[in-house]
Image 1 (tube, helix red, strand yellow):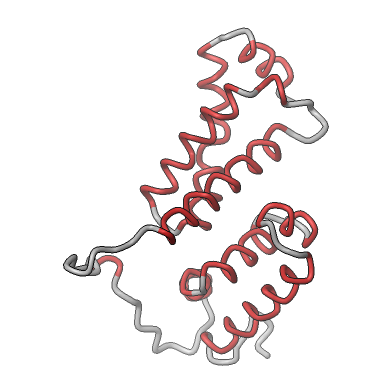
Image 2 (image 1 turned 90 degrees about the vertical axis):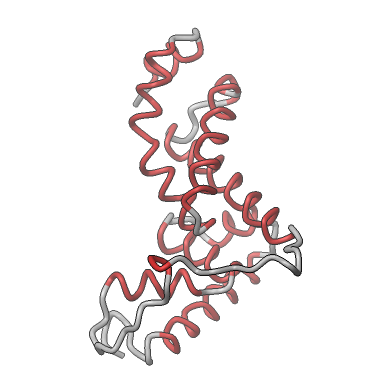
Length: 179
């Protein structure tokens, strides 16, 4: 689809690089954000992914769309960033205050809204959230998720089922179909 643009990128055309960046940056930022849950991390992931993609354009074979190839890079970078952050120690003397705009939302309304579902997904443990994001939002199958996350396919399936159950619990037993 973007063969000419990619060929120009390979030849070092900066305008072509910028054009590809403009076409994909918003969608790829969203992919990174869903995994990292951090604006700053998602921005870093986005930049690192594009740098990596542009440096390795010669390895892009065209057997998948450029967007799918780039998304795989973003997903891997986001997972690496999330895992790195998880392993960083937090000093005991450091105090954490939650900014006012990130305070938990009080959902007193029984209505199941997109915002309420998004909020619930963001509250899932990292493993559950990653599988839900990759499966439901990014469209990967369990085999692909297993490869990306370095887990067994059966683990991906069980994580998704557990995540769905946790979401039902968090949303008061309601689903999009009212059950």
